[in-house]
Amino acid sequence: MSPEPSRPANSRNLTILLSLIVGVIVGLVVVAFILLTGRLAARMYPAGGAAWRRVLIPTAGALITGFLLSKYFPNARGSGIPQTKFAIFINSGYISLKTVLGKFLCCSISLASGMALGREGPSVHIGAGIASVLSRRFGLKSDSLKHLVPVGCTAALAAAFNTPIAAVLFSLEEILGDMHAPVLGTVVIASATSWMVLHLVLGDQPLFHVPPYQLVHPLEFGIYAILGLIGGLGSVAFVKLLLAIRKWFKTFPKTSEWIQPAAGGLAVGLMGWFMPQVLGVGYDYVDQVLSGDFALKMVIALALLKILATATCYGTGNAGGIFGPSLFIGAMIGGSVGSVAHTLLPQYTATPGAYALVGMGAAFAGIVRTPMTSVIMIFEMTRDYSIIVPLMIANMISFFISQKLQHEPIYEALALQEGVYLPTGESREELSGVRVAQIMKTGPEPFSVALTVEAASKLLVEMGRNAWPVGNPTRLHGVVTAREIEENKSARALRDLVAPDAQFPYVHPDHPLSVALERMGAAGVDAVPVVSRSNLREPYGVVTLADVLNAYGVQREGAD
Image (cartoon, rainbow, N blue to C red; front, side, top):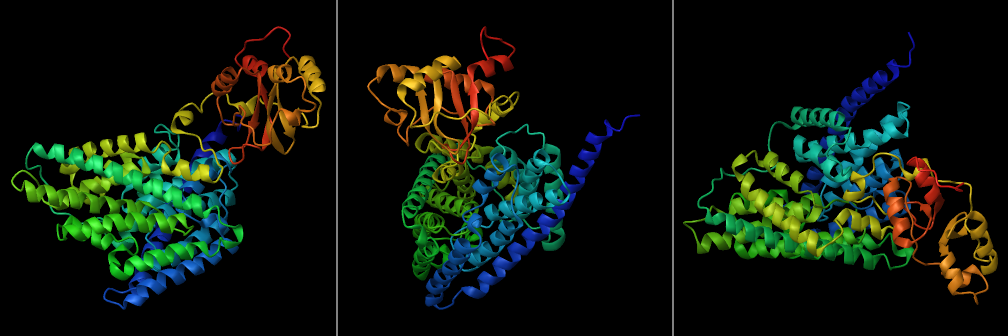
């Protein structure tokens, strides 16, 4: 009997085995990360410690991590979610061991020193990196490698948040953008394994402790809708501020990159001088707010300060995530709304802690844009099913407001600031069937910018095309069309028609052929360049209308 049929089964068995191994290792690493950052933070700026420590420690920590990030670990900045997506959609699942170690080290220093950032996003990047490294050690190819990266993401989030179901949903909803992804079985295995490791080491405790909740009166649904509206507006303000600060700091000279994080450290330190609760992730104070033990002025101030502190810490290039701060901001917003509502309508409303809980989900849904994950995550964190309906109402309103006022989700917007064009949710749904990479031509070169207009016109006629890329084999300037040449006969060379920074139609290798057809039709051309997602000026090849039609089985007369 031929051995060929056994190969897929062997491959599946290896993938399942690796999912179990990844779950165990990632679970242990994330537990170590939690314990290390928590215990170091308690020593660095202890409760009741001198105020000067709350300024000096974050600034010094940011200086150290800034140097390490700039000199040794440039891919360890930020939360790690965009970098994980880069690995899947651009780098065929590759994340280096150096990046994994750098992420762990820099985030440990950053979070322990009081940066107003979270540990969950970095945990996802670390988990993805561990999965990538292990997969390469076992000799897996690029396609299998890309399938194991989400497994590491899921295992990390399951341990970091103690939410195995939400971890699976997040990997499908945000990382892959496909709720029907074929990796569902392996991510479930890794999530369950990592969660069991967490429980064996740290015990069976939810991340937050909340009193039992019950709906007091149907009028509360209206208040939860208002909470969703305010949570959505707060989410948009946070995202826009973070992106604006990050964009501004990117205009500074490259040589200042190592010291930029210190600006975030100093800013959060000065805030911590007056309000220590703004330092770090702040889960202890979130627990306090959920129990209803807070002053209204305090939670309003902390909501505003946390938005500013986290946006500044992240925007200046520190290592850390936004998951934890999103929950903190949401709890403060929800606590504020609940406190006002309970003061005005005590007989019709639950305690303010219930609103703080719903606010956490609303802010997460508005900032991270994963409404399903946020509902299940809050449920798993609190293990209180009765909060689900108010949570769904607030989450969906916050998500809708965020979509309308901030068109790009935060991780796509961060990628765009890096010049990387990640596939959107809509395009990822279409990434099945024949793709551009399967039919594009890699041999033909773009027209040189020095080519005369007359020569370009003759070449287009000989090729039977009405358009062709312009540039060189390593950098594109744009696309020239026969119509442009006809309308600009007085021009001498193509450099007179195509500017170096011209906009032009293009496709990426992972696009379906339907996208290539759509963009050809919109631009009125029969050939478009295929370019990198990380650099639109980097050409991979050319795809023509004839190529697309041939792939669909439609042979054009006279087509090459």
